[in-house]
Amino acid sequence: MEWLCQFFERKETWAIMGVILGFGLGELSRIIREWKRRRKLKKALLDELKMNDHLINQKKDNLGQIIEALKNKHILRAESVHAATTVYDTFFPEIIECLEPLYRDNIHIIYGHLKVNDSLMDGFYSSIVRDIQQGILKDPWKSYRNQIEDMTNSYSTAQSLIKAYLANKPQDVLYRHSER
Image (cartoon, rainbow, N blue to C red; front, side, top):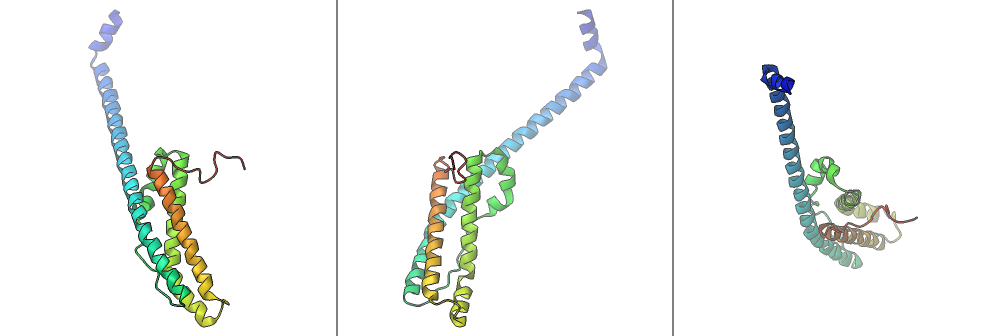
């Protein structure tokens, strides 16, 4: 027991203990900051999903108008405001570490639908005009109407995945838990 008293009387002991304590507190502080940041980023991702849920309603409405125009052999431009992807594009690699696989899968599929559809909508007008002018398709009106209907279905899929995700009930989109 005497050796323990002598150990604590030495200045070097207190210096080492101070370094260890300082390091430990610094690490604890870093861990807490990272945890708070990830929590904040996860909330930002949820907010972005909510915004996209509302935006999808507008996009589906626009696509419905385009389908009606195509039935009458008229062309409407399909370009629109792109889905919000800032949080996903910028911070998802950071957020992914704290998400369970089903949640990660859902986010990947949701944003995949949104980005593909935005790209298709951006190229719709020039594509249909080119195909009509060049006579590439037998019935471009029907072909493009089918494409727009597929896009509408894709937005509906993304929207149902968003709603399930926000309700904390992600879907098994990659069939992780089913036998195939």
